[in-house]
Image (cartoon, rainbow, N blue to C red; front, side, top):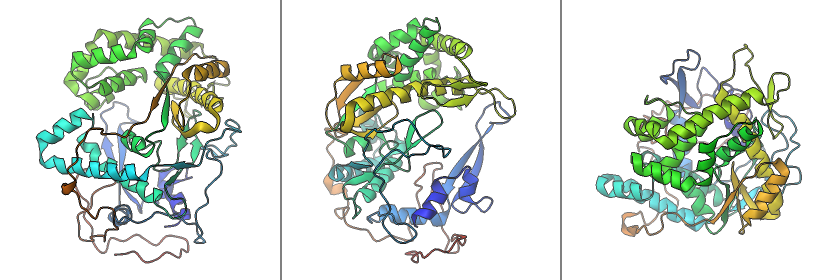
Length: 469
């Protein structure tokens, strides 16, 4: 599959159906599911899973130990851009921000760490046969069992690219500017992969994060419009104390406590319905305890007050909100329906976040390796006070930074080497009769494969080699 095919499948198309060639559903089977919301327009969620032929190709390419080199339609090696940030945004408009910023398009990674991490994922998956041991390991490292297989496959895919012949031990990064001003890396990458994979690949580098980013921005933005948010400011000043207290009181991990507090900040409803965000993460009983907790009640009240006043008083231009990254969002849809308050508020917060990230990255120069949404990865330690001053000067917001050296995950885990396939590092011959597991974890179980289930003819002349099955 060359890059023209990949671009049509995953890249620059306005609607997913254009890539999937509905109604034939060439690449993915599309399913509609009720999501439990009362909205007649948004009452269904779409799920996608690869067609059996595509699942087979994915398994063969990812699990077969093959080196992953991309080629174009002329069988030439894929071009690696010197500038990691694309010159056009998601709508094809020229990008004027980030001019002159030095961000590498090739990121060096530790392939040996990824290989070790792959063995750890296999070990944890094997431990599913021993539930007590697995439960202890999941609690110790704050993992979810349902995410293990996806983590393993992400690691395999990134390893395959990092072992390519043209740029060994490198991963190609290309960032695309989206509506709010955020930069999203394209494809499976170090920005969107699981945290443990990024830690293994970049161990020894330094993570730089904006502390309680959106809460700090919201409190200062509300203050600009004359609204005080004492509970939010208390959380920003003593986040560890708040997270630990909620984790102890309702019986969740500190990591889960952080997630559900952030969900409140993003407008998650105070509902114990299993279809809503917080009960889906921690369960209905713990969600009810969380919503009744005085710290949650204070933060939720401040968030509601802040959103109401900010959206009412924020300047508009032609019925559009312009955020600090100079990106616009309409307050009404094309049909005249009002856009949700949470969507509008997220646009404003992410605009400040994007502007702050740009100011911080400019201050760091060539030490930046990888861009994230509320921070970045650097080759060396960075002085937080310097970043704070640069962001204050560039945005008018006073944001704190946390700088921490990245460590290899699962420190102290003793893996029983004899439980692994000793030929793990050698290319494996694909087993065409094996059951198919899904790379995208939308559904459980396996996908049946039949010899007649082959893709339809692609509507353009391609010189592709015959499939290996």
